[in-house]
Structures are given as structure tokens and as C-alpha cells.
Image 1 (spheres, rainbow, N blue to C red):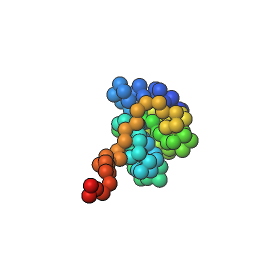
Image 2 (cartoon, helix red, strand yellow; image 1 turned 45 degrees about the vertical axis):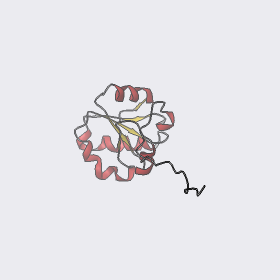
Image 3 (cartoon, rainbow, N blue to C red; image 1 turned 120 degrees about the vertical axis):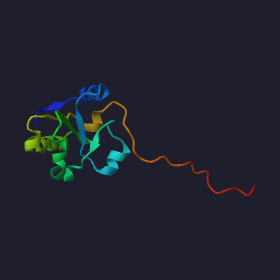
Image 4 (tube, rainbow, N blue to C red; image 1 turned 60 degrees about the vertical axis):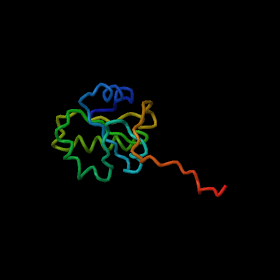
Amino acid sequence: MDGEVSPGDVERLVDEDGDVRVVDIRSPRAFAGGHIPDSENVPFADLPDRVEELREADRIVTVCPHGKASVQAARLVKSFEGTADATVESMAGGLSEWEGDLEIDAPEREADEGPESPF
């Protein structure tokens, strides 16, 4: 692992279309409820089997709710032979410190106006 990166720096990288892969290690349900734009969901439990997907990345930032598990995830990613040349960081403080907008994947629900009134 190459250290931690601030949420503000991650936001700048994402906004500027920087060459970064933001890997959110939360569950798919948590991810769908709100995540950093352009991030990808690789749940922590799946990471050992999916780390190969990160092979060509130059910079990888792992993200979790509070910045603790993402440190472990970044260490795991960095230990993979295919990412040895990449910069691999954990986002300090996790999503609890993120001040930017979150992208939400939850489907829009139609307004429920209740049963039709006979009046």
C-alpha cells in the first residue's frame, strides 16, 4: 500500500477524469444506496478473486465507510503481482469524510397516491 489519500484529492481526481480506479469495497446494497461517481463495487469478500480486474490500473483508491477496511483492501491489492507498479491508496476517513455528491443506483419509485377514492 502506498498510503492514504484525502477525500478532497479523490474528488479532484474523479472530477478531472484523472487516471484513477476508485474501488468501493462495501456490499452491493450499500454501494447502490450511494457511492462516489465513477467508482466500481468490488465487495471486500470478493476482492481476492477479482483483484485481477485491476491489473492495468495505474492508480487505485480503495473506499469503505470509515477508512479502516479500505486500508486492508489496499494492502491486498498492492500485494497482487499485477498491480505491483500501480499506486494503491486508501481514502482517509472513508465515505464518512466524503463531501462531494454521491451517485445513487437505487431505482426511482413512482409516487404512491394510495387507493383511488370513491369520492
